[in-house]
Amino acid sequence: MEQDLQDLIEKTKKTAQRLFSGPVPIEVPYKLWKSFDPDLARDLSLFITGKFYSREILPLPERQMIAVAALAALQKTEELKVHIHGALNVGVPPAKLAETVFQIGIYSGFPAVNAALAALKEVLVSRGQWPIAEEPQPKA
Image (cartoon, rainbow, N blue to C red; front, side, top):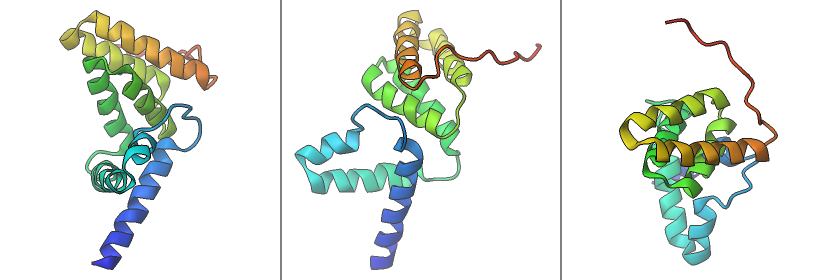
């Protein structure tokens, strides 16, 4: 049992490192949780990051694009910025994030798109990645 816990801790650290190392100038939720309840923060992190985000059925870039889409649709822009950073950190190109945001307009409306694009632009500016480099568009 102790080895299982150690493995989970290592998996949690490795996944968190991939997502949130480098430029993430926003307080990630774990740090906020930890300031209120360190034990609960650890348990939440082990479950969310160690058991869920580290699953390999969906690779981290795809998982982050889904998180971006869901948070954009819900207009949860502060959490969205954290996951935009995470998506960029695991290699999702900015143009794909923008396309992900535009896609939610069909289901959530364009006020949600506008708020999410503003968050995306803010993150890209903070990382020195604005404006987005144009990528060739596939022909239909």
